[in-house]
Image 1 (tube, rainbow, N blue to C red):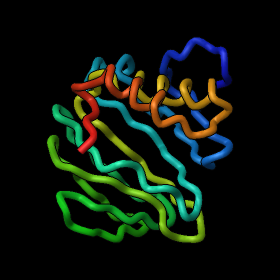
Image 2: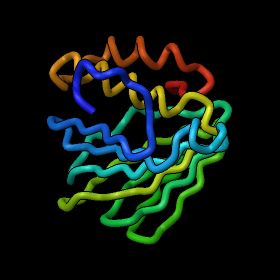
Image 3: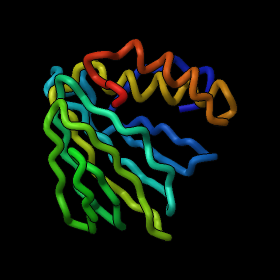
Image 4: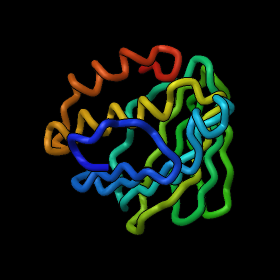
Length: 154
């Protein structure tokens, strides 16, 4: 997707942040699964920035490492994940995950039920694109405030 496009999540759509080096490819959307789940293939560059500690009040997540390594903090416990590892994060559990290694990492990431998670991804991407992909914490916070069932900062 490019800046200025209507941000409607569709299967096969990609959200690329050229400054952060991240790529999100929609494999399934709320619309394509009748709300059952959203699934993305997420690529993280080496030494990616950790996201804020957060939780999903009404959703469970499953992460499968397809390539590379990821570091996770889930419910206060540290985990190192390698290719083939699966991590389940139950709803309401504080967590964060990032790539500490030199090489890129790729994960399959499923969120169940879908709710509006795919639209949240698109809105966060659009906010970044509108700012030239330079970090804008206030704008990101404003976006996530519109999705209280999907995302909560800890």
